[in-house]
Image (cartoon, rainbow, N blue to C red; front, top):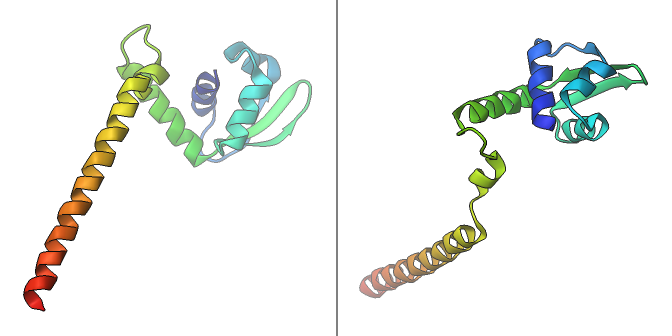
Length: 125
């Protein structure tokens, strides 16, 4: 929802200049325009100068442009009809498995590192 709006705004604006948009124009891109604009604003992707019932004056920030470009690239490389958020997150089991492996590797590294330090200190003492 806000990704499509961000891509549209990046397409229609240039640099860090403010531009006035018609509310109907942006509503055609995004169904829930007020919440999408609020998300873009709180994420730091857009700065809204003013908004009334017919017009919105806003500017897309450099971080917004980077996020819009990244979303465009991700959408182009994604297989059709596949949701990006599910593919990027992985299943709960995969995330838990990764966390457990990382914890075990950290513990193992700590034990080995401690043993090496003990040997070094024992030899030099």
